[in-house]
Image (cartoon, rainbow, N blue to C red):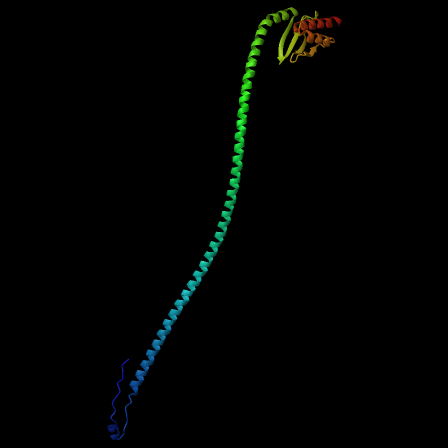
Length: 246
């Protein structure tokens, strides 16, 4: 704004004039005042604008801070929830680990027990193997004895079958089926038979065809004499007597 210099007034000259007057230069003063007011207004507007700008910036910063605070709080809450969940998971894992340790301990005990059982079973197997080997040796000796006995009794058995017209065969363990023919003169092919059980020391006749009334007497004699060939001869004679009586 241009500065207005003060004007030197010659008061004597002014008073000497017919119409004394002083030029106050009001136009310049008004212009200067107007310029000053305009400058003050512009300054005030700029200050208000700057203040408004700073205030808006502060409001924006406060809003951003508030939003960030809310976001941080939400994230913090989520982290707390996740922490609680993780703690629960860790607790479950600890419980599972304890249960697993208990199961492992139980399995180790079972394994130790199974190993002891296996050792016991192995020992029993060895005992059974030894017993089996002994039984096999005994069976082999028995078979050899039976083979020798069969070789010795074979000719006698063949002679008995031929002479008594009978057939002797083993049908089950320790059981003999003896069949006779040529007893009934009317029907020489008619069979008379009985099954002899020699499993025990007391021999038994399981069945006879046809039945013999005097069978108990013959069995008593067999168990006393232990002579099977004589018993077969007596059985043939008993069948023959039964045919003659009928």
